[in-house]
Structures are given as C-alpha cells and as structure tokens.
Image 1 (cartoon, rainbow, N blue to C red):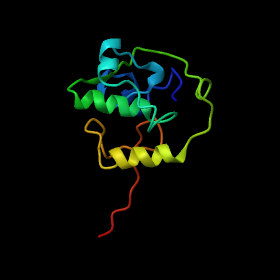
Image 2: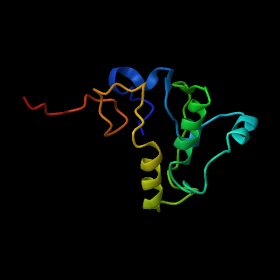
Image 3: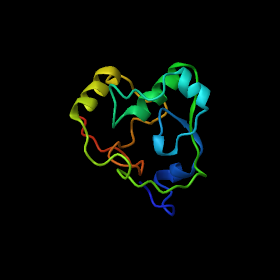
Length: 125
C-alpha cells in the first residue's frame, strides 16, 4: 500500500485507468450486477482471491474495471478476515487463472510491490 503522498512510478498511482482487478476493500459495483454474476465465489475462494475472481468475471462479461486515483481510503488488512490464508485457495486461483495476463500492465514493470518500478531481469545471449 502506498502512502497518500507517494505517487508511485511515473505518478501512475495518481492516474485514473482501466485495470484487470481491484481489491474488494474499495470495490463498487451495482448489487443487481453482483448478484447476476454470482457474487464472490466463497467455495473456491472463501478468504483470498474472491475479489480478483469477481473482477475477472466482470471483465469476461464485458465490463471494465476502473482504478479511481482520486479515491483515498484506509484499508486495515486482515481486520475483518484475519491473517490466515488457505494454500488451497492460491492453488485453485492459479488453476483457474494461471495463464491469464494483465493487458493493462506493462510487462517491463515489477510485480514486487505497488510502486510500478522497473522490473529487473537478466537476458542471456
């Protein structure tokens, strides 16, 4: 999580843009749409990944996921669900979406944190 004063790499954290998923901690969606798409999958993803899974299903249904840079919130990670993750959920998520790539994210940027830094890599000749 970035502090409000940190704009991230090239100020990307301050740019409204399409993305492939957002956290449910700040997700807004019409109730009717949420119910029509089956809501969160609490069987496969009871604790983790249910928000990302829902966003992917929204996208598959033709909707856009838009990151709103003007929104500012405090997310108390783990406050409502705890900090215990089920490894089976990660495996189920990789099984369902393991080959999916994010069309909105530049592959030259790191996935190590939220700062959108340059991805370090070694290219062998």
